[in-house]
Image 1 (cartoon, rainbow, N blue to C red):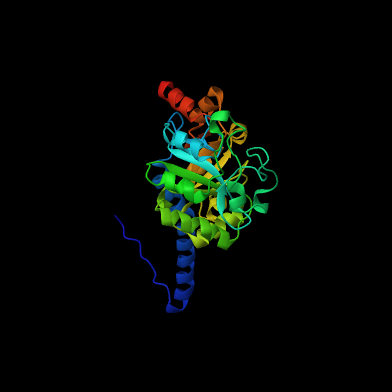
Image 2 (cartoon, one colour):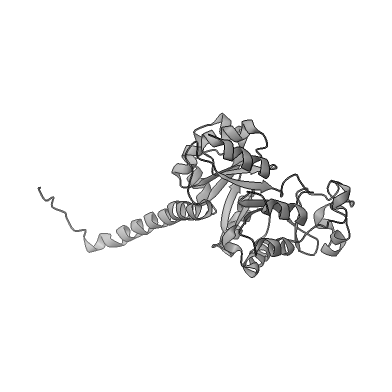
Amino acid sequence: MAVRSTSIPSRGSWPALIAAGATLLLVAVLVVAPAGTRAAAAFQSLRSPGQPGFIAAHRGGVDAPENTLAAMRLAMSSRAEFVETDVQLTADGVPVLMHDWTIDRTTDGSGPVWAHTFDELRELDAGSWYGSRFAGERVPSLAEFLDVLAPSTKKAILELKGSWTREQVGVVADALTAAGVQERVILASFTLTTLQYAQERAPGIARAIITRQVTGDPAVLAAACGAIAIVTSRSFLERDPGAVRRMHDAGLGVLAYTLNREEAWADALALGVDGFITDHAAALGRWLTRAP
């Protein structure tokens, strides 16, 4: 085999070469390492079409009032690997589980979540709207949910609703660390700046971007906040069936929401998504057992 001669760069060119090398290394760290390594750790492995993904119980599922401890406990007794819930801040800065911007639909109170202190929310009934046997269920704090999560083997996806400051994200990160569940939780948001603050404040806690559709290079989007996964809509994945492959090629996990019927489950399974977000965790678990 012939040996090709190689010229040695002059000393004067070294700074430029070092800078170029550092830039390439930075790109590799931001784009390849966090996505591929963390996604594999969080999801076990990226799926191929026909391989079942994990189940994430959306707001705890539909067998109890959403985002209550009753719903979370039921979800943890199901085949769901993840429990998905929504987090907002009260007027006095306490993270609580609540999906809507207002408390009208799921409690006997009214008005925005942020306009009430935690003590005020605790006076409300968050279960009677769903059924009399859940009367007296309260709006839970994030800390109370983590107390339930910690002794289990389950994982959680926490959607941080709206825009959060660096300090507010820090409150959540500190709560996860205090409960010892920081390696079992993914912080998710529609708001990129919120996830960027999460990356700055708690880089060791995994992050996922929620978006109704992905435009452009998914690796670039994920690199903006060090995300390990993208959570997106079933309708987008159906319109662009190559999207799952592109996200997998970037080392990213793919979660689809909110999949509540067998037709949707079959489509997601065929596409090879890594996570099914559903209101019907138990039924989906049974269906996956029977799926070819």
